[in-house]
Length: 183
Ligand SMILES: NC(=O)c1ccc[n+]([C@@H]2O[C@H](COP(=O)([O-])OP(=O)(O)OC[C@H]3O[C@@H](n4cnc5c(N)ncnc54)[C@H](OP(=O)(O)O)[C@@H]3O)[C@@H](O)[C@H]2O)c1
Image (cartoon, rainbow, N blue to C red; front, side, top):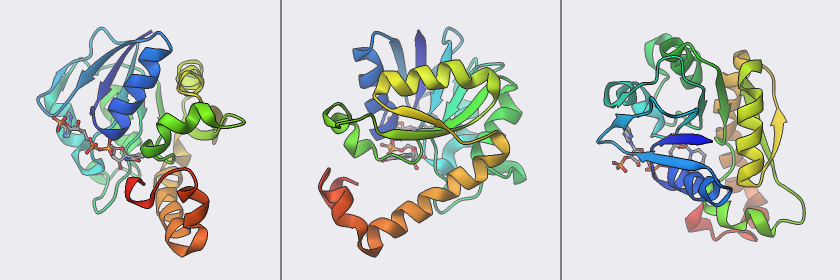
């Protein structure tokens, strides 16, 4: 599959590496922008507060199948949208999903060592199911459907709970898999 990642940092670059290993053709786009017209699926992996800017720098997003991995930390979704991914949907009009925003990128290179595939939540449009579930499996995750896009705000705010769990004493559970400074 032709995939474009918008954001080539921890998440975009890390998933691009995993998807390339699985045989996908991945284009990596950074803050200098680019064109995603050719892509069958686009991953948004920019800082949560930069999602609106990405629509200025990236061309060809209209009608695209988009997976949004952003978390909105210290910012609000633009335009009064309940979530970043619903903002994305309002701009593209294509099949849209929220996924990859809960699992830590620092653990991507440990997924293959897991005794069973780690779960990864996604919520969004039925039309996005086939691609988002395939890209989850090709990254090594077991996709877990969490409802329609109306659940995206809850999935975005869930990261606050995960940070609370890490800081509140369950850190060693995560730290067995990655040092704290990498989470
Ligand atoms: N890190 C994690 O473990 C993790 C896990 C789940 C979700 N998230 C979420 O995923 C998103 C990315 O996190 P990250 O850790 O990968 O961040 P990161 O390493 O800082 O990478 C951010 C990327 O976004 C690009 N970018 C910034 N503004 C842009 C724009 N206007 N247009 C296109 N590209 C732009 C940057 O471009 P340049 O390369 O040109 O600088 C960079 O490649 C965030 O929303 C974060 O909350 C992170």
